[in-house]
Image 1 (cartoon, one colour):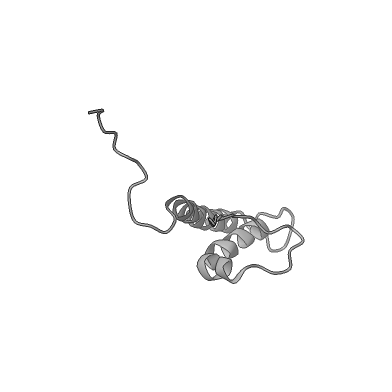
Image 2 (cartoon, rainbow, N blue to C red; image 1 turned 90 degrees about the horizontal axis):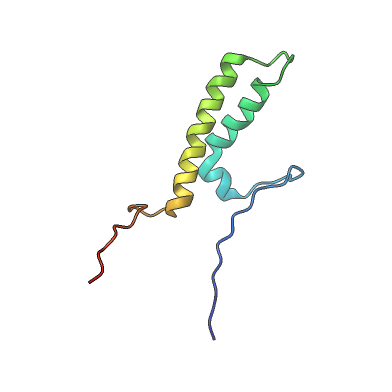
Length: 88
């Protein structure tokens, strides 16, 4: 018999009340920066601030980029491209 291993990535629904431990262990700074950005960007609220929104948005985009790189590379060091070889 053969076994198939599948790696699936999903995102939490808006009604989720918990997050996977791995998500918070690896990406807590990005999650917090994204939440802080959304709060600071809320219009007409006492806690809203354009300067803080820009700061947190920048931090969130940085962590988002790191997560995308890790997702593409699979936590492995190496090139993302393959060198073309001529036909023999």
